[in-house]
Image (cartoon, rainbow, N blue to C red; front, side, top):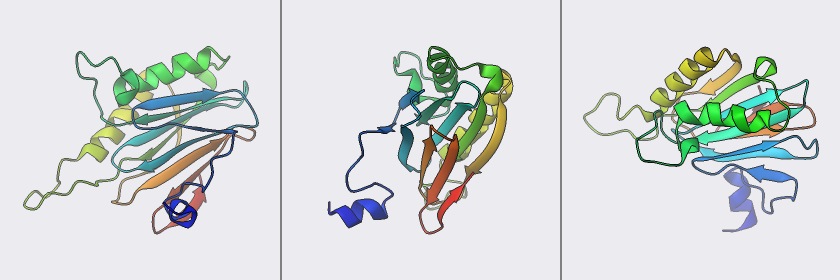
Length: 175
């Protein structure tokens, strides 16, 4: 893929050494102010960003499905098990759950099926689960950028805690 094609998809032509990317069913955490956490191509997946501004610890979960399936060892693949895992990994770096600000991004309806009014609703189910887990965990949901039918890329700048979202066809905005 040519560099300008990658940039059009929200992917820089060359990833810098200070970027940690969360792929499908992965999470990344950091307390390094020089790092940026990023999840590319969120469609029906959700990117859940947690940031403790006091400890300057952040994390990003790229969850694929709302609810854990028995037998699957990859807890980060699911919203209901991924968010607690994200908080646990952040705590190892000094974050306190009570201080964390939470952002939810993605949850678009990418899989539309002819004849079904709502398709599979994976995106909205992921968002609903993220809201339910946030409430259960007592987390402050600072902002959401969800729904629609366009993909998104989200990033967290560790130095400032700034969260930005680039949506296909809508450009970039700060949450």
